[in-house]
Length: 172
Image (cartoon, rainbow, N blue to C red; front, side, top):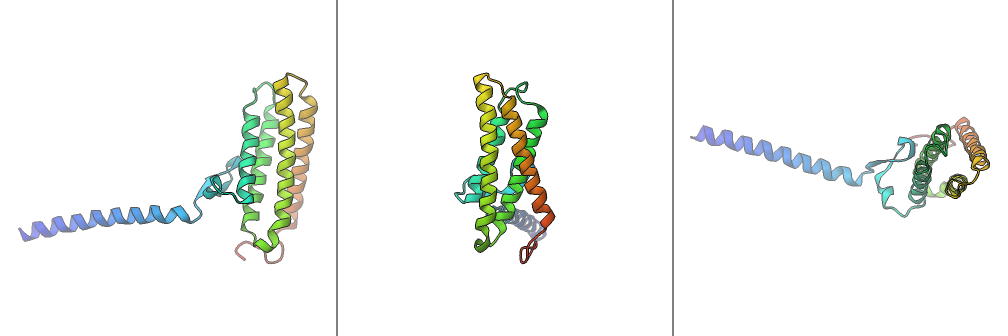
């Protein structure tokens, strides 16, 4: 009888240990930078869904731009334009994640650049959606959007060529 009680006790302790371990691991992952998905599948902090930080607000604006374009009729906007907007939105989200990691003392200028790029993308997509909704000629708006996307690509390529600045290397 004592052996049976010991075995049952060991099983109960084992199951309780697993339950406690699962509870601790779930609670531990909540506050430590859990990851959500941004435009283009970019990993962004899950807290950005509710945060009022500038980076979080810009992230939500980027998602809204991509959603607005996705909501347009497929025949109205070419697939390559949609792809380019999604790629630009993903690139902007990547930059926002990088900006968010910067120390506050150096964050203002890069954040201002990303803000300007988000505003340009919003304007271009708004023009396309407005013209599409009005049933007008969207070709001028698509050309303007293509120009803005090219500018975003050029800016990103320039930043990529610079590499990390002094003291801004990953992990440092």
